[in-house]
Every structure is written in structure tokens, then in C-alpha cells.
Amino acid sequence: MRKDDRIDFAELVKQCLAGDEKAWRRLTLRVTPMIFGMCNKMRLSSDEKYEVFGQVMLILVQNLARLRKPDKLLTYVGTIARNEALAVIGGPGPEDISTPEIIERLYGSRNLTPEEIFGSVSRIQAVTKAMALLPEKCFKLLWALFFDSDRPSYKEISKRLGIPVQSIGPTRKRCFKRLLNILKRNKLI
Amino acid sequence: MSKIFDKIGVLIGYLKGDLSKAMRRSAQAMVREDKDLKELYPIVEELYVTGQSTNWNEARSAALKISSQLFRDYLKSKRLKKTGYGVTVFDSQILPLPEGVRKADVGARRIKYRVGDRLLDVSLYPISSGSYEIIGQTSNMEGGSLSQVILKSGKETFTADTDAFNIFRFPRIPLDKYSLYLLAGRKRIGSVTIEL
Image (cartoon, rainbow over all chains, first blue to last red; front, side, top):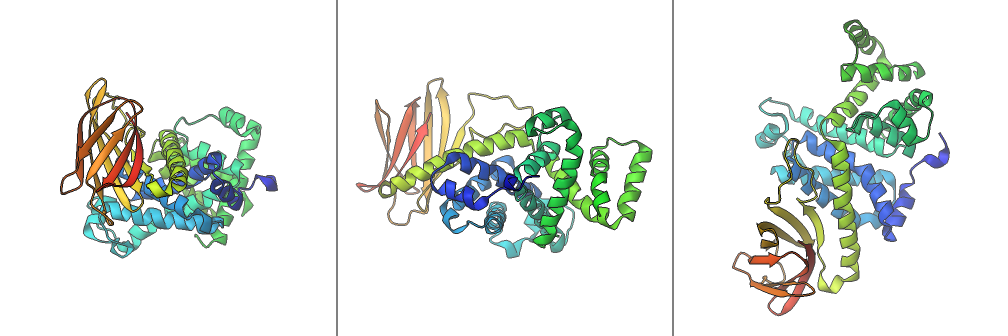
């Protein structure tokens, strides 16, 4: 994988601040799995998820200038998403994550410990954050393998990524290695 | 360590239910016995479960539409800082429909805007093929209570007074592109764009 394939968040943010909508769309794609993934764990309805999404993106665009470091930006998105989702559920703040109403919304009637609830949301936040930090090719490959609802064939993935079909397996291997490294480096696992 | 990454295909097949009974058992044993694979499995599983939880193609497309609109509104709001131009943060028209639900022209549409610190919530109800009833409300009215709302297109202007709860109503508005102005007394405190 080439070095220049890496996503440069600082550059992306700079372009967004200059009013570049294409850069903003690229940034949006990187943070969407994290926001929706966390909302799904909190069992928000479709409307609620999009309300949270809009709020998070607004707060993000308002504070972009202060968030040029990718880690900071993604952590910030995760924190706002968590707070906005909790606000939708009805909890006044992260401390109240274990209130009965929130437990009910998250996991039905199963009585979970606060650690389990916190762990579930934190895990998806960590994995999607690491995914957002991957180089473009890896991000696209993971998206195609796990998120693309059309379930593209290897032939289709090969066409999209511009790599031979027989390279998908080795590329997937490298991408997971990177994903795991990011998770470990950032103490996300 | 590097060998475990060769086994990801097996893990994905296991999660998708693509493996035979014997292969499933062997995959379970692999995860149980290999420390590194044990570490990797929850990550692959998390990605798989997350992937299954949403129609991501629709979500991606809707997220991009909302986000792009929000970005354009935000840039405009910075240019028009004095007039308090509002940013669209939610539009039900853009959201994907739940599976099995057909698109209907009679459904209500909800749009939410952020106008400075205020939240403007607008509901649009189709009353004929060419017109809508518009009901809206603003919250967080620090710096003045809303008294009047003006809807202006290139052709027509409509005015509605607000009640004590900052609610306003336009009974019949023809399809067009409008600017909606929020007024506190005679002072304009914000504006947004609505396309019917």
C-alpha cells in the first residue's frame, strides 16, 4: 500500500475550511459509520438517528478550525454523537447511561450492567474510529466487505478498487493488520 | 501473528453463515485456541454486525445529502451572519423509507433548522397536489420573542403572526422556492430557505 494513500485529515479539514464541499463529503463518509453505529447500539429510531447525525455534523462544521488532528476530530465526533444520542433518549448526560429507560431502549428488558452498556457503545466507537483512520483503499475495501448492502462480488470490488481479484485476499489481510495496529496504538483495545 | 490474518476469510464466512457444519466447528476451535485470533474476532464481528444493522447504501446517500445541504447552509450563514441565516439539520424528505414502505405524496415532511441558538421546527402537510399547509415553531427564543413570520418567493409574499408559544401557521402555500424570515417586533432575527 502506497504511503500517499493515507488519509490526510489536516488537509481535508483545511479544504473544508476553504469551502470545498467535496472534502466535506469525504469527511462525512469517514464519520458516518461511527455516528450511525453508535446510534444503532442505542437503538434510536431512523428519524432519531438522522436528527443526531445532523446535530453532530453541525457542531463539527462549527468547530472544524480547532480540530485539525485526526485523532482529536474523531474523538470529538464520537463524544458529540454519544451526548446527542443520550439527549434524544432522554438522559441528561453520560453519567446517566445506566438509567432504566436507557437500558430499556438499548437492550429491551435484559438487565445489563452499566459496564456492558458502556462497553458496547465504546467498542463500536473504537472500531469505527480505527476504520476512519485507514488509508482510502482499506476504508473502501472494508466498506465493500461489511457495509455495502448490495453485497458486491469480488469481481465488482476489484473493479471499484482497481486491484486484481486475486489481490483482494492479501489486501484484506494488510487492511486488518493496519486496523488492529491502529486499535492497539490508540489503546482502543 | 501474521498467519491469523489469512484466517479472516474464514471468520467472515463463519459470521455470514456460509460455512458447513464441520467448517463452523473448526472455525470455533480456531478462535478458542488462537490467542491472536481471539483478539481479532470481536473486531470482525463488530464490523459484520454493524454492517447488518442498517441499509448502509441508503444511509450513506441520505447522510451525504443532509451533510452537503448543511455545509452549504453553514457557508451561507457565515456570509450572511447579520441576517441570521439558518442551517438545515434535519429533513425527513431526504431520509430513506423503512423497508416495504412505498413513497407517498400525502405524507407530512419535517424540517429542522438551527438559526443561531434557536431551533426552528417546520412541518409541511400537503393539502393539494400543488400546495402545502406549513406549521412551525421556534424554541430557545433568547433575545426576543418571535412575533411574525414572512414567506417570500419571487412571485408572492405571505405573512403569519405567531402565538404565545412561538407557533405559526400558513394554511395554503403554493409550490415554489421560498425564503422564510423570522421577525421579533420589526427586527429580522433569522431566515431560512424552504423549497416546496
